[in-house]
Image (cartoon, rainbow, N blue to C red; front, side):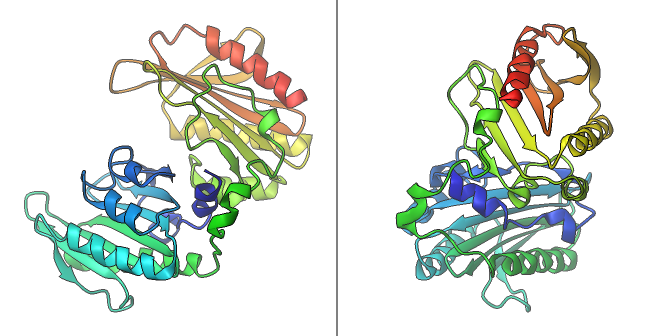
Length: 343
């Protein structure tokens, strides 16, 4: 998981080059097993990419997605492979598998090393591009949907060029050293309360600023906020879904108590502006902002509270709550999180 979080930090923030794609979407997140590209994230159709990635030494990866309100959307998947030759061969093999269902080869003049496919859809009045670009040991996969072929290829080229530039300075961890990577370089694991389940997802772990922005609600806005307030690091504990329920604790260390307070206030504003949640409070501290949101599928809710203590602040989430007024678990987690931040 540590290497996938390193890769997150050099996965392109798509909104920086295509600002019209302003909404977070899926597939997004860490990939620690090639099989997840099909079954978990749904990046690829079953029995297509996973065997190829495994055969050519897949190590870890990160996916990131942004979309507009219309058909336009971009997904980028950055995979670390065993060596540069394997990344190049895997690109060829994947391109051959993806050349189906109306996709035909094309070229991006600025990226001669790219393996590029395009499909036009008259029903949806859209054009779709899939591309693969090896960059040393790294392999970039792009899916881009746009309004016409010219925009599709132009924007795909913009994204791939930006992604290649980010990767040019990235040094993958030698494979024999991955197991020795420090899973908690900022010492924040103990500052995050333990959720009720011990089955933690690959999202769990440490994040520096660049990697954290790939899981942020509003990355462009949060970058400036965190830089201005002495951001040190973030640690996430997120559980896998069990019986429709999951939990997430995210703790941040800022430069000082006033900087944590400023960040806390702005996080509350971002939450209010980005999501249409219903506000509630917990009896222990009615100044703590909490929200609940209805999940479209399943008729359940998720609850979120923000809290802070000293130079630390945290968000606490409970997903899959049948009754939004049942706040017993989030109250318990909020109390535990305050204690964890006190140390």
